[in-house]
Length: 336
Image (cartoon, rainbow, N blue to C red; front, side):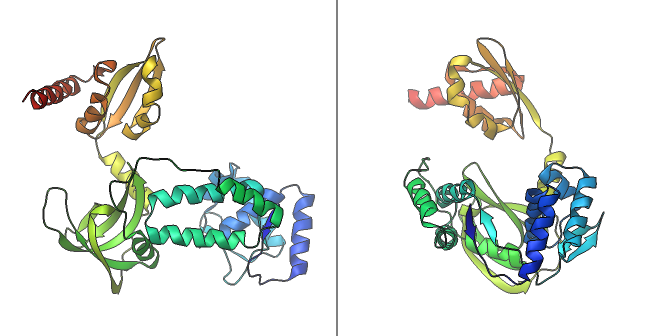
């Protein structure tokens, strides 16, 4: 085990009693994990704990009582949510070897998808953890660090402003951005109340309440040319990012697409197919039939076009027509 000690503010005797008690009832790992989860958020609902650890609500309530009986100051109740009284601190945080390796691998991935400031902050945090590792474990982590390479296509854009955006989301600061839409040569200033960010199709996207449009909007981060934090907190309570995305997905009508690939092409489409709304795959022997749900036909049509005669559009007819038009445009372009 790899132990990393952070600043502790509680009685050592209470920790010993707590650990001994949990070992006796054979629920040590899960209850410790619940304790860490409670420490990481202001309020955690019983349903969230149930889903996180794949246990029943009855088990969650029992584990919460166990923590309370062990002296952990938990506030809240069933049906509302639980939190730990302010000022309470956890016992030494324990990282096993696989967790330390996961953090090292994560650094390689993070550096390729965030801005320079965020990547440096992650590396700095990881360095603090490494600084207190035992020498034997440190050698293993360093060996792994030299043996992992994140290979991807070179970035064709510069990811900027992520660090400032994350800070605005966390602090509920109003942001002023200069944003250039893809169909416009000039950028315009907008005041936003940021809700959250997500990473998709090799790009970062910001979802925020736009005061100019008086509605929620999605902004591609690499189109933000300038960003300023205003000296103003927004008070309006917006839905969580997950709630917003689910709501938008349900409100938009998805279009069904069915295509067929020969088995020989499967290795080339294995990873990309998930980026286009794959919902079903059927093995047909020498071929694979795939079903997608897409917001429109144009994006998937351009993806399918790269497979030329090795893909068959089964349905709908509208997509077949679009594929034909794209192919004809391509032929005209190279016939000039």
